[in-house]
Length: 324
Image (cartoon, rainbow, N blue to C red; front, side, top):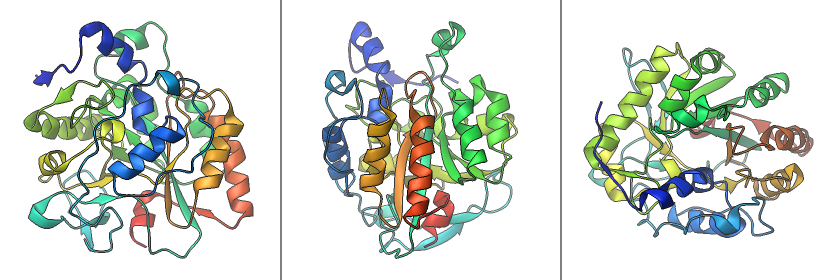
């Protein structure tokens, strides 16, 4: 499949930007977290020391998107639906009904929940053109993290790119057949759905829509069955045009309200503290399942999980959280 891609920087600059792509997935500094929170109309993670050693070198944050007309992600005004129906290859789970004009709705956290529930989400990132790096030995997976989540019995949602599923089909199939997990769509290519977006190449509307379908097809080919109709924008970057491009995909966009700062972080304690300081009832936490660019995530999870349980929290997948 051929995509029309608008290059947003010179080739050398773009290569450098792709090396820090996880910063644009909600894993950057506290300052970056605040920018993301305001852009999505939600609540950013707490201010504090940056957990990412690369934060100072990360690309400039994209321009703010207009607030979503579909209720700012709380679900309070959009209403719940259960979709899609049989034959789609995706589970029937709660979703948000479209917003005004049919724009895709955006979920950030269960704002009305008084239950101590929290969803840990993990972005399995890999851009369409990173195959040579994987062939050279760079690891975009993190099987130890998945093993730890299983051992600790932490239900989780993995936002997976189609390219990741193609690179690691056995792992994608294993995650996608384990009821403890659900796989959500993080695009096929991890290219931007709006620009600027942390130096990512940008897709036009038609290519963006096709990118979503291509990712779902990659999950199907890997044998995944626990696939849900949720979508997370690469880099967390979206605007009304991006929401409009998704409108026929029958998905709910899922962002976050707690940024872990695990991308490029070297200190798992700092990552764990960012999460522990930010979590509130109904929170969605963004972390990563990409070993080379988020090397301390598994260690941080081993500190986060018991402490949140000590505080009375229960871990749920996004599909359960959205139903609250």
